[in-house]
Structure formats: C-alpha cells, structure tokens
Amino acid sequence: MPVRACLAAAATALALLTVPAASPAAAAPSCTVDPATPKHQMRAMWIASVVNIDWPSAPGKSQAQLQSEYDGWLELARSLNYNAVIVQVRPAADAFWPSPYEPWSQYLTGVAGQDPGWDPLAYLVRRAHEENLEFHAWFNPYRASMPAPGGAGTDLSKLPENSPLRVHPDWAVPYGGRLYFNPGIPEARAFAENAIMDAVTKYDVDGVHFDDYFYPYPVAGQDFPDEATFAQYGGAFAVKADWRRDNIDRLIREMDTRIHAAKPWVRFGVSPFGIWRNAAADPLGSVTFGTQSYDANFADTRKWVKEGWIDYIVPQVYWNIGFAVADYAKLVPWWSSVVAGTDVQLYIGQADYKVATAGQPAAWFDPGELSSHLTFNRQYPQVQGDVHFSAVQVRANRLGSETILAAQHHSHPAFPPSWGPAQPLLFPVVTSARRTPSGVALRWHPTASGAGPFASATSYGVYRFDGTTTPGTCGLADASHLVATVRGTEWTDASADPARHYTYVVTALDRRWHESPPSPPRRV
Image 1 (cartoon, one colour):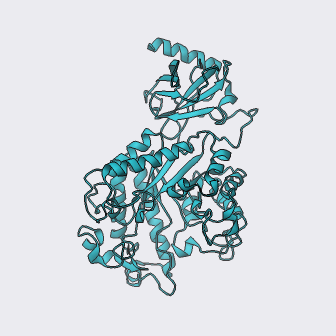
Image 2 (cartoon, helix red, strand yellow; image 1 turned 90 degrees about the horizontal axis):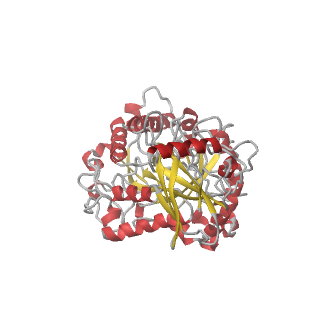
Image 3 (cartoon, one colour; image 1 turned 60 degrees about the horizontal axis):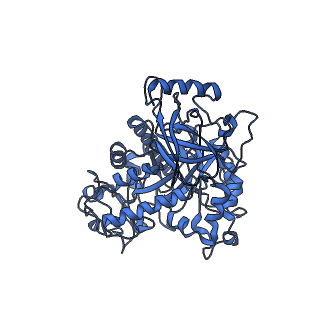
C-alpha cells in the first residue's frame, strides 16, 4: 500500500476508534472485562536443564534431536496459549553457550566441558522469538556442582580444568554434597556476574531469571563453612546472618544495575522460596509456619521488591489451598500486599509437579486444584500471571489438570504484562485479507518503525469479530476477541469458518508489550 494511502487509512481509523496511543488496552469505565480472558498476563513454564529434568531430556543427543525436542516444548507452550519460557542455561557454573568464563554444561553432551559443536543458546532464543514467546534466561549464580555420582560432588578435581573453581579453589565451599561459590568473596561474586552478563550482552534475551538458590538450603547439623570469609570481609557486621544477607543484596542490586545499563529492555526477575518470613518471627511476615528464605537462603526478597532492585518476582507458592503450614490462600494475598505500590510485577510459581504425586495432600489429587489457584488469583489484581514447574509436568497433564486450567483460564492468547515507559506506537494497516483453502490469510504493513518519537513494533495482536460491524473500544478491552499474537506481518486464521463473515483488526506491540491503537478494520 502506498504511503499516502496508509496515512489516509490511519486518519480514518483514528476518527473511528479513539484509543490512547500509549495504552489502547485500558478499557473505558463502561466496558465489561471478562476476568477469564485478560489481555496481559504472564503465562510461562520453567524448562530445567539440571540433571536433564526437561531439556535436554538426556545427555549425548545430537544437535537435530535437541533442537527437535526444544521445538516440541515451544509447540506445547503455544498450544496452551503460554507466552514465555524460562530456560535454565547456567545450572552449575557451566554454560549452554560458548562462554569465555565457564565450561560447556555436561547436560548437553554427557561430558562436562565438551563442546557440542553448535550454539544452543542462540537457537533457544531465536526459536522462542519466532513463536512470539518471551525468552527468559535462567541462571544459578552460586551453585557449581551436583552430587556424585552424576556430578562432581565436592571433588574439585572432577570439574573441568577451565571450571572457575578449579582456577580459583579458594572461592569453593563444599556443602551438602555440592560445591558452591563463596558468596562472601567479592571477586567470586563479580565473576558470577560477569559470566551471566556475557550471555545477556551477546544474546537477545527478554529476561534474566534467578531461582531460589543463593546460599544453599541448610543441612541439619551443618553450618555453611564461611567463618574465615566472615572474619575477612564481615566488616562492621556483628551477626554473620546479616552479612550473608548483605552479600546477596549486593548481588541482586549489582545485577539490576548491570542488566539495565547494558539493555534497558531486559527484565530481571527472581523466583524465591514462597515464604519470606513467618509472622511469628517478624510481624511483617506471612501467617505461615515453614522454612523462611530470609534465614535459609539469606534472601531478603521483600527488601528487593521495596527497593525496586528486580522487575518481577515469582514466589514459589508450592502449596495447596488450605494447607495449614503454608496456605496458598494466605500467601498470595501476602505477596500481593508486598508488591502493592511498587513497579515490581508479581507472578505466582505453581507446583504442577505435585498433581497426583504420591505423598502429597489429598488436594493435589483433585483435578481442579491448579485451576482453583488461578481462580483465586483473580481476587488480587497485583497478581499478573503464573509460572509452572516444570515443562515435563505440564506435558504430563496428570488427571487432566492442565486441560482444565487451559479451558478455564487460557482459552485465548494473552500478551505478557506491559512494563516500563511507553512511547507512542502507531498502528499497522491491514493490506490484504483473503480467503484461502487454509483459512483467512492476513497481511499488514507497520506504519512506523522506531521513527521520530514512535516506538518500534516487535510483535502484533490479531483480533477477530463476527460479522462486519466496526468494533468499538470495548471490543479490545480484554482478549475475548484476540485470536493470535505473532511476529512478522502475516498470519492465516485457520479456524475461520468459510461460511461466516468476519472483521479483523491488528495492533502493534513494542518490546515492553505496550500496544498501539487498532488498525482500520478489514472485513472478509
């Protein structure tokens, strides 16, 4: 379509549809929004590589096999209307990319340090984006080995020669059958940050993700052996626990600064253990009675939220509704109150792995337990989505629980939550809409691409309405008419009924998921 025609169409559309350029999704007060079809909601699954939990499914597979496996996970995510994957790429001071800092991961080839002959991380990111899924790179900052016999255990000599702890054995702490970087040594912390930032700067990741492992979970009767480090670096801290928390605070604060200095559009998130502190230990804590990440991992996660050092938090609320020690129905409101008034987004970590698992409470044998969690979340607008552990559990679909959840909560696509500052974003113009044997084939033209004050479009949303009536603002208030989210400028609606008439509009979205006004409507 000629530029002049595009501009004319744009003017017509603006006259028909008055939606604010920075936030078209904001519904007018008179719009009725269906809570089952939110337009913006994080829907992600963890894909764990450590001990080959999810991907790779086993070490030693060929490049073609590994790529096919990963493509299968993306296909599963798309089929369930997920919009992000969180993939573990540094499980134990190793790498799923050619890192100048650390050896290749043993979970690729079966041999720690062995070059697989290709760049897995490049493929992981590219394919996720081709499916319009966010890619969050998951790093474990301080774990350096897994227990023997599968891992090196506490034996430094079993690590590859270029392993950082072989090069700097003074950084190594053996504990609980594993090796860890000593978080109290500034040079060790800086090295871990540098190793992570190597991936951030080289690859087009959407997020940097840490899980709950900072200081390791305590082993009964054993203290993490860092007394000498505390004596050397403890400074004015009278209590070792406070010093340990300060060490982890420094890691989080420094990573926040470094990530956003390098790439402001990359989000930094943490998924901690679900309990910060119990109310019996701290009046600011939750009414729970379990392990506290504040003391177990020395992770002051509430502080990180209040200080704005992270962009999102995914507490692992891995308990059922009504569980006395840690009730889902008490923890979600508590976490909601923590993020309230901050810019930190809250997603809930879901324990899909507990469904129909022997030894779990009876609630986990109810096919609707997981779905009831998401229904409960609707009472708390601070909850902006969920992350599921893990991919193999989502695929297993035990008791049909994933099918129920998808039908009740993920019946339509959704964009990840928008975040950060918004620039004006011009809408696209649909240049072609025609019926084909495969469905209605749509093509559109972006009216701006980072020109002047306008943001660049990264992806697009396609909305379909029955009949030929021009959709109004409320038609885009939720995702009830959203049929696809895509990268690129064409898509075929394979679900279109050849005997029915439809009206389509397309919106553009920037890297932070801010949405443009809709295109002029196109009828077929």
